[in-house]
Image 1 (cartoon, protein in one colour):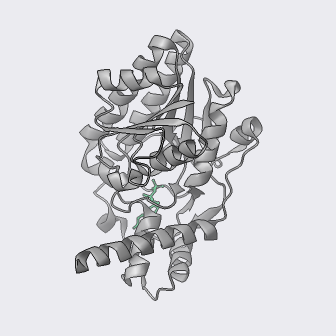
Image 2 (cartoon, rainbow, N blue to C red; image 1 turned 45 degrees about the horizontal axis):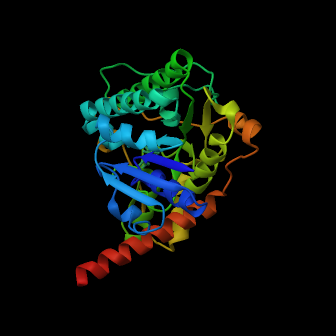
Amino acid sequence: MNVFITGGCGFIGSHLAERLLDRGDRVMVLDDLSTGAMENIAHLVGRKGFEYRIGSALEVPLVSEFVDRADVTFHLAAAVGVKLIVERPVHTIETNVRATEVVLGAAAKKQKLVVVASTSEVYGKSTSIPFREDQDLQLGPTSHSRWAYACSKALDEWLALAYVREKGVPVIITRFFNTVGPRQTGRYGMVLPNFAQQALRGEPITVYGTGTQSRCFGHVKDAIEALVRLTAMPAAIGEVFNVGTTTEVSMMGLAEMVRDAAGSSSEIRLVPYSEAYPVGFEDMMRRVPDVSKLERLTGFKPMTPLDEIIRDVVEDQRSRIADTLAGARG
Ligand code: UDP
């Protein structure tokens, strides 16, 4: 099969590219390296069937060429990460909405299959746990940049579903919950790689707010398995799927588990939200997916245990820190 991945040098995209190459697909990757990195695909360059282009998912001719050549396009290119969104709202909105328009427009010419990556952020402030794909979204005001991300991805979903209904384009939407694993960078504010780096460096582990807020972390390899299975199911077309796990952990509990896994004696420090985020930022207390729809259709339920997930992330960060130190020593 020929596969095109926008954002293929990113954390999830690079794992997906590897998995698809392993099963014998031809994989084309497009990435502008805004948050992705060449080092994520360095081990794939030169492999049979692998091709990459550094460029923007907003470039219509480039995207059209790749979509035309592919049997399925995974549209993962997006501005992600809470920090980036709050700092660069214009970039976030424009990238997320326009790139999806370009990809869907290209797919519509020959009715090509597209998977659009969305996010659990679209549920917004909802406290109706667990989150089901068909429940109401509850976003905050437009004066708070944080909600620009959720809104831009919700618009992507609406556009994708409109293409399905109006133009018959086969599109599947996946809402990723907190997806973590090797290669994820802490640069854009993601909690687990940050905690792992802090623990390994012996720095204070910064838990924001009270630390009682919780998340459910899913391993990237499970998220990819879900993606791969969904693309093989005609019944997935025109549907939205949560992708994540249902095991909740508080941020304080996570900090303790990471510290143990790293064999660290770092202090765990509570940092008030007012110091951690710009004024007006609202954190979510809980975010739990209902993954029964995914399981019903594909038979798959992402469930790598949290301790294994943490171990993988800590070991990945350990080797990155070792590489950086080796580089600094020359
Ligand atoms: N968080 C934290 N310390 C950090 C970074 C994040 O306590 O150094 C918290 C953050 O406030 C949130 C949770 O960890 O409650 C998950 O944050 P992340 O940005 O990884 O994901 P999201 O908020 O999008 O679920």
